[in-house]
Length: 216
Picture (cartoon, rainbow, N blue to C red):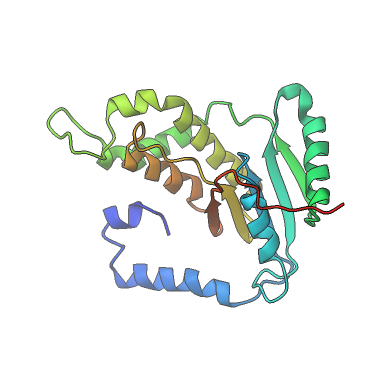
């Protein structure tokens, strides 16, 4: 269920909308065999984005025994293999079982025009005009000021669709909301588009306090 669109279309309170939501919620009551959790650790948040999926694959969870794939960002184009080795070493250090580690190189590439058009359609009803300057809506100034962050979120959506469309759960680092520079509508539009047409997505943001412990 999308964050924004059902309410624009009037479906949020419809019988079909409630039924769809109930179906999505009930899926967590049944164990999934041969499940896979995809973890997108995009920022260092103290390890919470890694810890939660690890706990979700433990006994009595609906994803008990799930395979864990970890995606992280390359520090540079030349350091992909080193970044992969470092991530593997980190996971082993904290005894987090995983099936694969993938280092993403092209997060900064411009999103495809079709993704940009989809985003523009999504925010169309939330745009301000010279006559309508209600707080929280999206102005042209907002879009220009947040162009790089918007492109990054759109590119993240493309990568999620490419790599994780068939996973059973996606756990991803939540972008930091900054109310002083980002309108609430623009921020929610980022999250809506990132998670659209995907399996269940758990967005997590730690406070950079380490939640992982290792023993020698």
